Length: 150
Image (tube, rainbow, N blue to C red; front, side, top):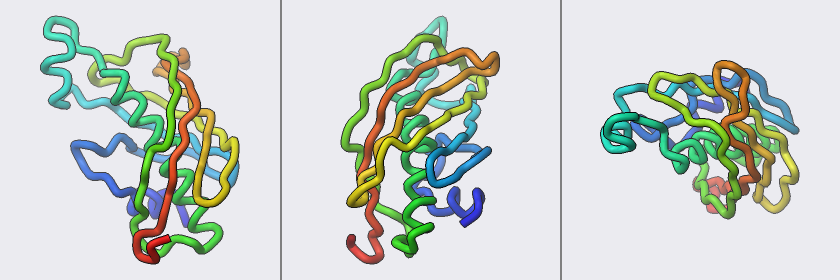
Protein backbone atom coordinates (compact mmCIF):
# COMPACT_ATOMS: atom_id res chain seq x y z
CA UNK A 1 0.00 0.00 0.00
CA UNK A 2 1.49 3.35 -0.97
CA UNK A 3 1.16 6.67 0.86
CA UNK A 4 -1.77 7.91 -1.24
CA UNK A 5 -3.69 4.64 -0.76
CA UNK A 6 -3.41 5.04 3.01
CA UNK A 7 -5.01 8.50 2.76
CA UNK A 8 -7.90 6.98 0.76
CA UNK A 9 -8.56 4.49 3.59
CA UNK A 10 -8.80 7.18 6.28
CA UNK A 11 -12.29 7.24 7.82
CA UNK A 12 -12.34 11.06 7.93
CA UNK A 13 -13.28 13.88 5.59
CA UNK A 14 -13.08 17.65 5.73
CA UNK A 15 -13.54 19.49 8.01
CA UNK A 16 -12.29 16.74 10.36
CA UNK A 17 -9.41 15.42 8.24
CA UNK A 18 -6.06 16.53 9.71
CA UNK A 19 -3.66 14.79 7.32
CA UNK A 20 -2.37 16.43 4.13
CA UNK A 21 0.41 14.02 3.24
CA UNK A 22 2.51 11.16 4.48
CA UNK A 23 6.21 11.89 4.05
CA UNK A 24 7.58 8.52 5.19
CA UNK A 25 6.11 5.29 6.46
CA UNK A 26 7.39 1.83 7.37
CA UNK A 27 6.43 -0.90 9.84
CA UNK A 28 7.93 1.03 12.78
CA UNK A 29 7.17 4.70 12.10
CA UNK A 30 5.31 7.33 10.13
CA UNK A 31 5.96 11.01 9.39
CA UNK A 32 3.25 13.25 7.98
CA UNK A 33 2.22 16.89 7.52
CA UNK A 34 -0.84 19.02 7.95
CA UNK A 35 -1.50 22.73 7.40
CA UNK A 36 -4.11 24.27 9.68
CA UNK A 37 -6.32 26.38 7.42
CA UNK A 38 -7.25 29.79 8.82
CA UNK A 39 -10.80 28.95 7.63
CA UNK A 40 -11.36 26.28 10.31
CA UNK A 41 -14.42 27.22 12.39
CA UNK A 42 -12.70 26.55 15.72
CA UNK A 43 -10.46 29.61 15.20
CA UNK A 44 -13.51 31.90 15.44
CA UNK A 45 -13.84 31.29 19.16
CA UNK A 46 -10.42 30.05 20.29
CA UNK A 47 -9.43 32.82 21.09
CA UNK A 48 -11.36 35.88 19.85
CA UNK A 49 -8.45 38.30 19.45
CA UNK A 50 -5.64 35.74 19.16
CA UNK A 51 -6.73 32.53 17.37
CA UNK A 52 -4.80 29.39 18.36
CA UNK A 53 -5.30 25.74 17.48
CA UNK A 54 -6.99 23.95 20.41
CA UNK A 55 -4.96 21.21 22.10
CA UNK A 56 -7.65 18.64 21.40
CA UNK A 57 -7.27 19.35 17.66
CA UNK A 58 -3.47 19.03 17.90
CA UNK A 59 -3.99 15.67 19.61
CA UNK A 60 -6.43 14.61 16.90
CA UNK A 61 -3.91 15.52 14.19
CA UNK A 62 -1.24 13.49 16.01
CA UNK A 63 -3.62 10.53 16.33
CA UNK A 64 -4.72 10.62 12.68
CA UNK A 65 -1.16 10.70 11.34
CA UNK A 66 0.68 8.86 14.09
CA UNK A 67 -1.74 6.06 14.92
CA UNK A 68 -4.44 5.74 12.24
CA UNK A 69 -2.19 6.09 9.17
CA UNK A 70 0.41 3.74 10.67
CA UNK A 71 -2.34 1.32 11.74
CA UNK A 72 -3.81 1.19 8.23
CA UNK A 73 -0.32 0.53 6.85
CA UNK A 74 0.30 -2.28 9.35
CA UNK A 75 -3.11 -3.91 8.86
CA UNK A 76 -2.70 -3.81 5.08
CA UNK A 77 0.86 -5.16 5.30
CA UNK A 78 -0.49 -8.21 7.10
CA UNK A 79 -3.49 -8.39 4.71
CA UNK A 80 -5.90 -7.84 7.61
CA UNK A 81 -7.73 -4.82 6.17
CA UNK A 82 -10.22 -4.94 3.31
CA UNK A 83 -12.06 -1.61 3.52
CA UNK A 84 -12.29 1.45 5.74
CA UNK A 85 -11.33 0.58 9.30
CA UNK A 86 -13.23 1.28 12.50
CA UNK A 87 -11.05 3.40 14.76
CA UNK A 88 -11.32 3.89 18.50
CA UNK A 89 -8.94 5.97 20.57
CA UNK A 90 -8.11 3.99 23.69
CA UNK A 91 -5.70 6.34 25.48
CA UNK A 92 -3.67 9.51 25.09
CA UNK A 93 -1.28 11.45 27.25
CA UNK A 94 0.05 14.59 25.58
CA UNK A 95 2.20 17.50 26.79
CA UNK A 96 2.00 20.87 24.97
CA UNK A 97 4.95 23.25 24.59
CA UNK A 98 4.18 25.70 21.74
CA UNK A 99 1.10 27.19 20.12
CA UNK A 100 0.01 26.53 16.53
CA UNK A 101 -1.46 29.51 14.71
CA UNK A 102 -3.86 29.56 11.74
CA UNK A 103 -2.05 28.80 8.48
CA UNK A 104 0.83 26.96 10.16
CA UNK A 105 2.12 23.63 8.82
CA UNK A 106 3.07 20.97 11.34
CA UNK A 107 5.02 17.74 11.00
CA UNK A 108 4.01 14.69 13.03
CA UNK A 109 6.54 11.94 13.76
CA UNK A 110 5.34 8.68 15.27
CA UNK A 111 7.25 5.64 16.48
CA UNK A 112 5.47 2.36 17.13
CA UNK A 113 5.80 1.11 20.70
CA UNK A 114 3.72 -2.00 20.08
CA UNK A 115 1.05 -3.45 17.81
CA UNK A 116 -0.79 -6.48 19.20
CA UNK A 117 -4.35 -7.75 18.88
CA UNK A 118 -5.19 -4.75 16.64
CA UNK A 119 -4.12 -2.29 19.36
CA UNK A 120 -1.46 0.18 18.28
CA UNK A 121 0.45 2.30 20.79
CA UNK A 122 2.82 5.01 19.56
CA UNK A 123 5.14 7.71 20.84
CA UNK A 124 4.09 10.76 18.82
CA UNK A 125 5.69 14.22 18.46
CA UNK A 126 4.57 17.33 16.57
CA UNK A 127 6.95 20.00 15.25
CA UNK A 128 6.32 23.46 13.77
CA UNK A 129 7.91 25.01 10.66
CA UNK A 130 11.01 25.91 12.70
CA UNK A 131 11.39 22.26 13.81
CA UNK A 132 10.47 23.29 17.38
CA UNK A 133 8.62 20.72 19.48
CA UNK A 134 4.95 21.72 19.71
CA UNK A 135 3.71 18.70 21.67
CA UNK A 136 4.50 15.06 22.34
CA UNK A 137 2.93 12.09 23.98
CA UNK A 138 1.80 8.51 23.82
CA UNK A 139 -1.39 7.68 21.91
CA UNK A 140 -3.04 4.29 21.54
CA UNK A 141 -6.01 3.06 19.58
CA UNK A 142 -7.88 0.01 18.41
CA UNK A 143 -8.09 -0.46 14.66
CA UNK A 144 -10.60 -2.97 13.30
CA UNK A 145 -11.66 -3.88 9.78
CA UNK A 146 -15.38 -3.09 9.66
CA UNK A 147 -15.79 -5.14 6.46
CA UNK A 148 -14.75 -8.25 8.40
CA UNK A 149 -16.04 -7.10 11.84
CA UNK A 150 -12.68 -7.95 13.40
